[in-house]
Image 1 (cartoon, helix red, strand yellow):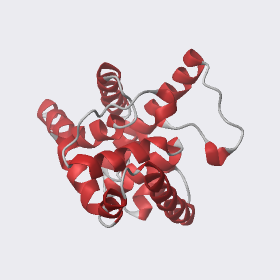
Image 2 (cartoon, rainbow, N blue to C red):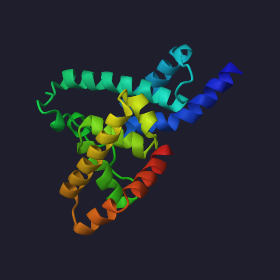
Image 3 (cartoon, one colour):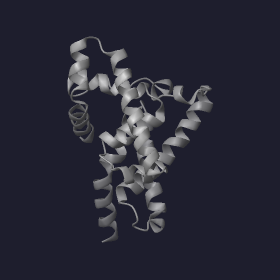
Image 4 (cartoon, one colour):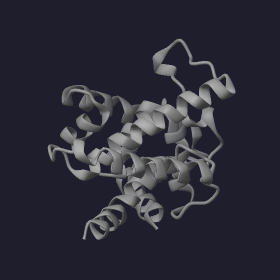
Length: 196
C-alpha cells in the first residue's frame, strides 16, 4: 500500500515538477536528473511534511532548492558573472540555449516562452509558478519563502517586465497584440503541451 501511495503521488506531482524545470534547463538529461533528485528529496523529507502546505507546494519547494544548487554549479562551471544590478540579474537564457525549438501554439507561445527566459531567473520562476501551476498568493509565498505582500508586488513587476520583453522581441505588432491580449490563454496552452 505504501508503494502504491508513493507511485500515485509521483504520478500526481510529476507534471508540475517536470514543468518547473522545462523552460529553465535546456538539456533534457539534466532536466530529467533534476526531476529525479527532486523526487528523491521528497522521499527523504517525507517525515518533515506536516501538511501545512499542499504536497504540490512542498515538492515545488524541494524542486526550487535543487534548481538553486544547479544554478550555482552552472555559474561556477561556466564562470557566469552575476551582474551587479539585481534588476538585470542572471536569466535562464544566460545559462543555456532555449529547450523549445517548437511549441504547440505557434509564434505567440514561442514569444511568451522566449520572453520568460530573458527575464531575471527569479521573475521567470515566479511567473511560471503563477501561470503553469496556478499557485495562489499564499502558495507562492510558501514556495518562494517570501511574505505574501512581497510576492504580489513582485508579480506585478514581473508581468510588466514580461510585457516589456515581449514588446522588444515581437516580430510584428500583430504577433505582440495576439500574445499580450491572451497571456493566460497561451500560458494554459503551453502548460497542457508540457504536461504530456
